[in-house]
Image: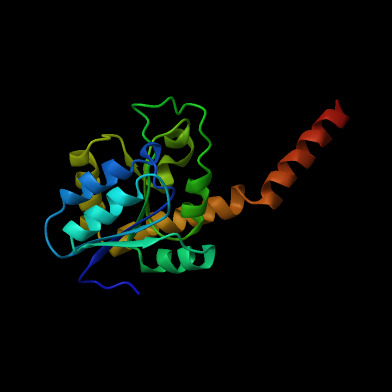
Length: 186
């Protein structure tokens, strides 16, 4: 359940370096005050790093590995969800943002790094992290908070509408059918 007195940031992904776990924790540390909460769910090689951060900062809640239904419940707690891939250290030009599809369909505002073609296709539907530094992440999370609930949710609603209209099996199936119809017409 969301509260106006807190701003809850959710990260649910594999706890690995390429998923920006260290960036997430360092960026969150740039946010001052009890208003901010970070909820992390997942498993991976950096699980110990997340546990240590949660021990040091009472605003961090580590939930561990969750069933998918529990992840969906976690999204309901979120004011924003975070999708990170380290693009400056890894070649992410060919990454398909499958996790982003899940997050955009959640109906919750999304902050995301700009892997591959993400900015071009999805830039209007999420808040883009272009400065992949702890200060950059802290700044965009603060900006999303300060944008206000109504503004955040209008972006999330656009995202949900876009995914529902363009990224479902039915929508892709219709494109394939139309492609074959065009071939037959030639």
